[in-house]
Each structure stands twice: as structure tokens, then as C-alpha cells.
Image 1 (cartoon, protein in one colour):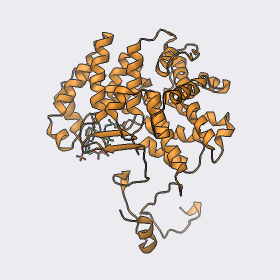
Image 2 (cartoon, helix red, strand yellow):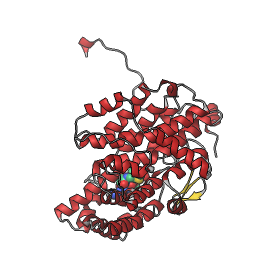
Image 3 (cartoon, helix red, strand yellow):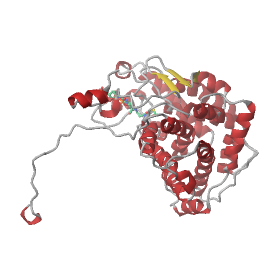
Length: 399
Ligand code: ACO
């Protein structure tokens, strides 16, 4: 590796890497990703094994603390998160003040940053280890609460109080539906989806979290930045966009080839949503797991969704198409996730909120790792200036 700091000091040289195609901004021991082969590991454990054997809260513990918890540690962690079972009245009032058709990501982002108005001790410039543990558990608990409340508000319904006797995913579904009798298969499927989203190294939202957190902005503002970056359709917002795309294909009755011709046309400004990835130039291992889970969930729940057939048909045709093959464009995590959310009864505009819920542990783990790293610095990229340099100020009347 070249020591850029030394090189710049000696030569004034600045590297230009638009979109950070090949710029490492940090070292990290959380997630390993080999995009050429399609490998993803959390703390050295393969995503396939974690998805099969672990739980969302256990894998969250793993990314935060770098090891699998003992039974006692996991129980304490789960109980601590469950203890944050509500939000201040001011946050509830804020949710109720939004129009019912507000996008839940707008509500989530506002709520996250607003929490900083209520928990001043957690807004300190440098948190103690105990405060960091509190922040982690509190945000894990409260993000679930505001996500469910935002949904209830959008439906014009009263908030449903969290029930500590339920596991994390069952409680979230209960808080959305008002029914404590949550189908175990539904809760398990949601848990697997959340596991698959836990961390994905320096993606756009995680990099935003690191960027904002590097100024020592408080943890709530930092996480809110992650929510904002995630919302875009090229990132986490793709799961909603995929469903809308599949719906459009269904409604229009367009053939797969005809639809793909549109996304291949560079003038169309459209893309095959849920396909392609900056790092994976092979199958996204999460997409493989989700596709299998999707079939299983729909069969178990007895759901027949025509959108699943459309997705499979589209994938089959795209994977044989020279355009997608030559560019190494494969389905990513968002291609099938929406179909599962839909089968679980989660509405389309909540999909990206579900992604945020799953990604929160990754954001917090990456933030924790960054602030604990010796010599940690504010993130501050350089630029190549291309504007004017010799303008002189003209009085407004003479312009
Ligand atoms: N549909 C059609 N063409 C595509 C797609 C797509 N989904 N993705 C990439 N391409 C094409 C580009 O047009 C470009 O073609 P060109 O070489 O002829 O100009 C080539 O493939 C390379 O694409 P880039 O945009 O340079 O790739 P980049 O790494 O910058 O983008 C991204 C990655 C944003 C994920 C892109 O593939 C995309 O827009 N996909 C659709 C949105 C999506 O599913 N996002 C979710 C990503 S996963 C996640 O964030 C959780």
C-alpha cells in the first residue's frame, strides 16, 4: 500500500477516486467481503452459518463485541434491549404530528436525531464504555419502537405497547399488528432477513455513519445520517423500488425481454432494481440465502405471490443476457427481500425501515470500532478544484 499522507506531504499529490471505487477509508475487523467469489463473513463466521444457526440479536452482539456471547451474556443483552421498550412522550408527539402518508424513513430519520434532545448524557463528545453499551442497547430497542409506531400512525391506529415477554422480531410484529399471537415461522423469517442485513463493511450508509461520527457528532445524529443514506434507491431504498418495479411489470403485462431492453437502454435512465453491486461481481451470498428463504416462507405460509414468479423469470432471463453477464450484474440482497416482507404482511413503504433495523448493529459496531481506534481522525476527503481562480468582485449594479 502507498502511504498517501507521506506522498501528499512530499509531492502535493491528491488521489482522485470518484465514488470511492477503490479507496480504503479505514481498517476494520468486523466484516470480511470477497466480491469476486461471493463470500461474506461477520467476525470470521460465514453468513450462511450465521443465518442458519444464529439469531439477529446474537449476531448483533457478535459484530459489536467481536465474539459470540455465552448464554448468560446473550440473555443479559436481550433483556437490556427489551428494557428500552418505549420512547419519550415528545417523540410520540412528533410521530403523531407527521402526515399519515409521510414516508416512514422520514419519520425514522427525524426520530433518531430527535432522541438526542432527550438523552443528553449519551450526547457527550466521548462516551465511556458503559455509555456506549447503553447507547447500543437503547438504540436497538428504540429503533424497533419508533419503526412500529411510525407504521401504526400511517394506518391511523393507536400505538401498541411493546411486550417484553416476546422475542425481538415477534414483539416488532406484535407492535405493528396489535396481535401477540405471532406466527413462529413469520418471526423466524424476519429474524433471518435482519441477520442478512447486519453489516456489509463500508457501504454508503455505513460510510456516512463513519463520516458523521468522525466529527464526534452524537450517536443519535450519527445513526440518523445512516438512515438518510440508506433511503436512496441505489442503496437500501432498492428493496421498495424492486417491488414497485415487479408490480409495474405485472400491471403492464410487459414481457421480460421488453422490460430488460428498457433498462439496458442508457437513455431510459432506469435500472434493473435489485441487480448489480459495487463489490459483488458474482452472486451476492445474501441473495442466494434470501431466494431459498423466500420459497420456504411462501410455501409455509401458503402464500402464492405472482411477483415471485415475475422476479424468478426476470432473473433467469437477465442472467443469460450478454448485457448483464458482461457487466457481472447479479441479484443483490434487495431483489427477493421485498417479496418475503410482503408475505410477512409488511407494507412496501416499510421495507427500507426493515433494512435500517437490520443494519443498525453494523452502523453502531462500525462507529464503536472507529472511535476506539488509536489515532482516529475526522474524515475529510480532498478534491481536485476545477473552478475559476481569478475572478474579481463586481458591484451588484454593474453585473
Ligand atoms: N441495471 C442496469 N444496468 C446496470 C445496473 C442495473 N441494476 N447496475 C449497473 N448497471 C450497469 C451500468 O449502467 C454500467 O454500465 P456501463 O458500463 O455500460 O456504463 C455498469 O453496469 C456498471 O455500473 P455502475 O453504475 O458503474 O456500478 P456501481 O458499482 O457504481 O453501482 C449499484 C452499483 C449502484 C448497486 C448499481 O448496480 C445499481 O444501480 N443497481 C440497482 C440498484 C440496486 O439494486 N441497489 C442496491 C444495491 S445493494 C445495497 O445497497 C443493499
